[in-house]
Length: 454
Image (cartoon, rainbow, N blue to C red; front, top):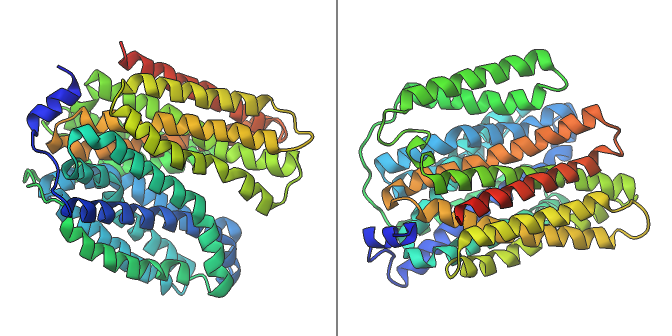
């Protein structure tokens, strides 16, 4: 019996009736818009924060880093807490924390205050990112999960694409605190809408405090160590060693448990494990490309920052429109085949971009990034769908947490790859090598996905 059939058998009457289904979907998707937009807008505001708070440009990067650190440290514990206390309760708590932290960010009189508030905001975003798909799993029947995840991809991609524009628009008429203040009314509306979400009972299993600390140390030191290891190996290498030791201790502590913090029980399942590996590879390819392409547009073709932004926009836009199509296809055909096709399409687009000369018009390069967006959209939705529907409904939170963790680990790896290439190779060569490495990783994601079709 297939995993989808098994899930259908476990929950034969899954899903909410209309119009509750509509309101629940809007609540989840609105929350994702809030989180994704906030990240994109904050990046645009860094130069303004640097000037108005009179701090170094390097120090302002912590406004982004603190948020990402809290997010990656909080994903799996948030998923476990949702499974213990109930998904809706923890999700609503995340909305409250995120909204209150947005107020603190808007009131920040100093960079230190702002960084701490951003860390708290990341902790609030963690349950929103990790439990969104778990809640949607209870909103819709399994046969519709492909298209639901496609809508999710559409919302995230469009929010990522328009985030910088919205940030620039806010900053053109108001000071930087308003980029955080605009979250508050949206957060309050979402908090009311959350009442429409399903409320499956929690397991009541208490979280192990030491495991949560080991998880935080493992992921936190991994992100900071990866960022520092090339330029400051005396700092980066010890951090990576602490990360490895923390993960080893965490695995040993959690392995005997029925529902471990790191979902080892799910990773023992071949289909789920292959989807996680493929996801890490694909997001590594995406991030290395997102770092490399601006250098090619600006330094290779001599485009302005504005034109570079315009040149980068078609990729996420194509992802946005490919996501729903891919979702419907994944509900009707073998998702592993669709993932393989998507991975190989992404690899083809990246390989063409890596080999394209920096002369003449950049328009063909933009067309190649659109091929990349098509491949990424075809891959992402069925891969995420498999991670979600291949597990029991009561483990959907753990699957969602692992899904987000795979994405962040992949993006961190992609950024590290570009750091290494820029350190070891000439500045005009590194971006093309980065695209080439991304092509290899995307092809690997497609190949790993093909193994699920066997």
